[in-house]
Length: 178
Image (tube, rainbow, N blue to C red; front, side, top):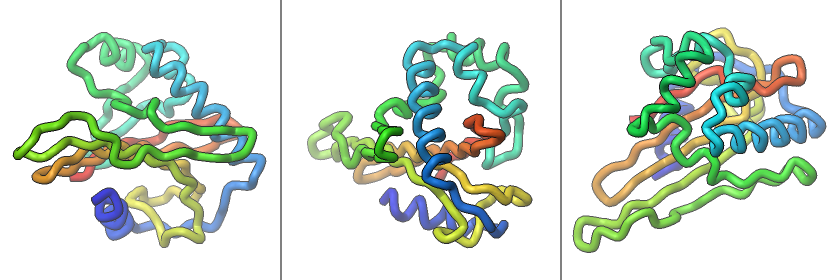
Protein backbone atom coordinates (compact mmCIF):
# COMPACT_ATOMS: atom_id res chain seq x y z
CA UNK A 1 0.00 0.00 0.00
CA UNK A 2 2.88 2.41 0.59
CA UNK A 3 3.64 2.09 -3.11
CA UNK A 4 0.08 3.21 -3.85
CA UNK A 5 0.59 6.26 -1.64
CA UNK A 6 3.85 7.09 -3.38
CA UNK A 7 2.19 6.70 -6.78
CA UNK A 8 -0.54 9.08 -5.66
CA UNK A 9 2.20 11.48 -4.68
CA UNK A 10 3.61 11.23 -8.19
CA UNK A 11 0.21 11.57 -9.87
CA UNK A 12 -0.40 14.90 -8.13
CA UNK A 13 2.93 16.09 -9.47
CA UNK A 14 3.34 19.37 -11.31
CA UNK A 15 6.90 20.79 -11.51
CA UNK A 16 9.91 19.42 -13.36
CA UNK A 17 13.34 18.97 -11.80
CA UNK A 18 16.68 19.56 -13.40
CA UNK A 19 19.06 18.66 -10.57
CA UNK A 20 20.24 15.68 -8.56
CA UNK A 21 22.05 15.35 -5.26
CA UNK A 22 25.78 14.73 -5.48
CA UNK A 23 27.26 11.96 -3.31
CA UNK A 24 28.71 14.67 -1.04
CA UNK A 25 25.28 16.31 -0.74
CA UNK A 26 23.69 12.95 0.10
CA UNK A 27 26.20 12.44 2.91
CA UNK A 28 25.45 15.91 4.22
CA UNK A 29 21.67 15.35 4.03
CA UNK A 30 21.91 12.06 5.93
CA UNK A 31 24.30 13.50 8.52
CA UNK A 32 22.01 16.42 9.23
CA UNK A 33 18.91 14.22 9.10
CA UNK A 34 20.43 12.00 11.83
CA UNK A 35 20.97 15.14 13.93
CA UNK A 36 17.37 16.16 13.22
CA UNK A 37 16.14 12.74 14.38
CA UNK A 38 18.11 13.09 17.61
CA UNK A 39 16.53 16.50 18.24
CA UNK A 40 13.06 15.04 17.56
CA UNK A 41 13.71 12.16 19.96
CA UNK A 42 14.72 14.65 22.66
CA UNK A 43 11.82 17.00 21.77
CA UNK A 44 14.39 19.78 21.57
CA UNK A 45 12.41 22.54 19.85
CA UNK A 46 15.44 24.82 19.48
CA UNK A 47 17.46 22.09 17.75
CA UNK A 48 14.52 20.96 15.57
CA UNK A 49 13.87 24.56 14.53
CA UNK A 50 17.28 24.75 12.92
CA UNK A 51 16.02 22.31 10.29
CA UNK A 52 12.65 23.91 9.53
CA UNK A 53 12.00 26.48 6.86
CA UNK A 54 9.56 28.87 8.55
CA UNK A 55 6.74 29.40 8.05
CA UNK A 56 6.20 25.68 7.47
CA UNK A 57 3.08 24.97 5.48
CA UNK A 58 0.86 21.93 5.24
CA UNK A 59 1.30 20.59 1.72
CA UNK A 60 -2.33 19.46 1.57
CA UNK A 61 -3.95 22.77 2.46
CA UNK A 62 -1.10 25.28 2.12
CA UNK A 63 -2.01 26.46 5.63
CA UNK A 64 0.77 27.43 8.00
CA UNK A 65 1.63 24.72 10.53
CA UNK A 66 4.24 26.73 12.42
CA UNK A 67 5.06 30.40 11.91
CA UNK A 68 8.20 30.16 14.07
CA UNK A 69 10.02 28.09 16.66
CA UNK A 70 7.65 29.20 19.43
CA UNK A 71 4.75 27.54 17.58
CA UNK A 72 6.80 24.38 17.19
CA UNK A 73 7.73 24.36 20.90
CA UNK A 74 4.04 24.62 21.88
CA UNK A 75 3.15 21.75 19.56
CA UNK A 76 5.89 19.51 20.97
CA UNK A 77 4.54 20.02 24.50
CA UNK A 78 1.13 18.73 23.43
CA UNK A 79 1.04 15.03 24.40
CA UNK A 80 -1.57 14.32 21.71
CA UNK A 81 0.56 15.81 18.95
CA UNK A 82 1.74 13.39 16.30
CA UNK A 83 4.38 15.74 14.96
CA UNK A 84 7.20 13.71 13.44
CA UNK A 85 5.47 10.46 14.46
CA UNK A 86 7.96 7.58 14.02
CA UNK A 87 10.36 9.63 11.86
CA UNK A 88 13.12 8.46 14.19
CA UNK A 89 12.57 4.85 13.09
CA UNK A 90 14.38 5.46 9.79
CA UNK A 91 18.02 4.37 10.03
CA UNK A 92 20.55 6.40 8.07
CA UNK A 93 24.32 6.06 7.72
CA UNK A 94 25.94 9.20 6.30
CA UNK A 95 29.30 7.42 5.93
CA UNK A 96 27.93 4.98 3.36
CA UNK A 97 24.87 6.95 2.18
CA UNK A 98 22.80 3.96 3.28
CA UNK A 99 19.15 4.28 4.27
CA UNK A 100 17.53 1.34 6.08
CA UNK A 101 13.77 1.50 5.72
CA UNK A 102 11.27 0.02 8.15
CA UNK A 103 8.92 -2.31 6.33
CA UNK A 104 5.79 -3.81 7.83
CA UNK A 105 6.83 -3.56 11.44
CA UNK A 106 3.86 -4.64 13.49
CA UNK A 107 2.57 -1.96 15.84
CA UNK A 108 -0.44 -3.73 17.26
CA UNK A 109 -2.05 -7.14 16.88
CA UNK A 110 -5.78 -6.76 16.50
CA UNK A 111 -6.75 -10.33 15.67
CA UNK A 112 -9.78 -10.52 13.42
CA UNK A 113 -9.84 -6.72 13.03
CA UNK A 114 -6.48 -6.75 11.28
CA UNK A 115 -3.03 -6.00 12.57
CA UNK A 116 -1.60 -2.49 12.45
CA UNK A 117 1.72 -1.96 10.69
CA UNK A 118 4.32 0.77 10.32
CA UNK A 119 6.46 1.57 7.28
CA UNK A 120 9.06 4.33 7.33
CA UNK A 121 10.93 5.00 4.11
CA UNK A 122 13.44 7.59 3.04
CA UNK A 123 14.73 8.33 -0.41
CA UNK A 124 16.41 10.93 -2.49
CA UNK A 125 13.98 12.33 -5.01
CA UNK A 126 15.91 13.52 -8.04
CA UNK A 127 14.87 14.68 -11.48
CA UNK A 128 15.54 11.27 -12.93
CA UNK A 129 12.99 9.67 -10.59
CA UNK A 130 9.89 11.74 -11.20
CA UNK A 131 8.44 14.38 -13.43
CA UNK A 132 7.77 16.68 -10.48
CA UNK A 133 6.04 17.13 -7.18
CA UNK A 134 2.93 18.84 -5.90
CA UNK A 135 5.11 21.80 -4.99
CA UNK A 136 4.90 24.19 -7.90
CA UNK A 137 8.04 26.22 -8.49
CA UNK A 138 10.44 24.04 -6.48
CA UNK A 139 13.26 22.99 -8.76
CA UNK A 140 15.63 21.27 -6.36
CA UNK A 141 16.12 17.65 -5.42
CA UNK A 142 14.51 16.48 -2.19
CA UNK A 143 15.01 13.98 0.57
CA UNK A 144 11.59 12.51 1.25
CA UNK A 145 10.64 10.58 4.38
CA UNK A 146 7.31 8.76 4.37
CA UNK A 147 5.76 7.40 7.56
CA UNK A 148 2.83 5.04 6.85
CA UNK A 149 0.56 3.40 9.39
CA UNK A 150 -1.91 0.90 8.01
CA UNK A 151 -4.08 -2.12 8.64
CA UNK A 152 -6.54 -4.13 6.54
CA UNK A 153 -9.09 -1.31 6.52
CA UNK A 154 -7.10 1.93 6.50
CA UNK A 155 -3.83 3.28 5.23
CA UNK A 156 -2.38 6.71 5.72
CA UNK A 157 0.97 8.31 5.21
CA UNK A 158 2.77 11.47 6.22
CA UNK A 159 5.35 12.87 3.82
CA UNK A 160 8.20 15.08 4.99
CA UNK A 161 10.05 16.96 2.25
CA UNK A 162 13.57 18.19 2.94
CA UNK A 163 15.93 20.16 0.72
CA UNK A 164 19.57 21.10 1.07
CA UNK A 165 19.90 24.87 0.90
CA UNK A 166 23.42 26.31 1.19
CA UNK A 167 24.61 22.99 2.70
CA UNK A 168 21.82 23.19 5.32
CA UNK A 169 19.04 20.61 5.58
CA UNK A 170 15.61 22.24 5.62
CA UNK A 171 12.16 20.73 6.12
CA UNK A 172 10.12 22.69 3.60
CA UNK A 173 6.76 20.94 3.79
CA UNK A 174 4.79 18.07 5.20
CA UNK A 175 1.56 16.57 3.91
CA UNK A 176 -0.67 13.57 4.44
CA UNK A 177 -2.27 11.06 2.14
CA UNK A 178 -5.17 10.26 2.49
